[in-house]
Image (tube, rainbow, N blue to C red; front, top):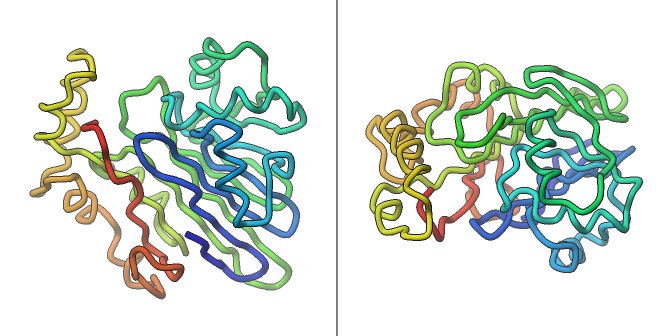
Length: 249
């Protein structure tokens, strides 16, 4: 999916599934990945339609340490100048799996900071990881109004904090794949993780099945009203449901 946000800003969802998650945000002054859940070879294949490759990337922003969000970190060993932004708990959990040390840039969950021409707002989200976060990326080009991209993954429900942070986004990406029947059939997932997922399911139901109705109930009406388009699955997406599950988490 390629989405033009205006003012020279583009956003590309490279992949979103239980096998990997990654997106490319391009601004006039940087190219960044949001999560990096694919090995380097596959990632370069996904980047090819955008005219970019991994060596063109300036930074990576990590939401949490699950493999479908960080498996491509190993490929950065050949690209040591790529900065990797994460909170310390996420970086610590990810570093254990790596044979090299990326160019970590640490932030505190809840903080806002700048990377080149991008203002990055971080906020906590409910998920079974060490310190998972969502992001809002804001870019201002010249006299144009700021363009805002909100990125929230693995949500089972939308807490008030998340509602407040995503309010006013021009593009909102929500990822949800909470299905109680699929979770019950998943024999690979440790039972120790299932109670957490089921708690998230109970919170999500308003009512909800795949998590989506519960999530939709938590999206601010003002946000939906200002979306220019909601054509899911086309290049004109402004509100995007990400990840079709292959396992029940």
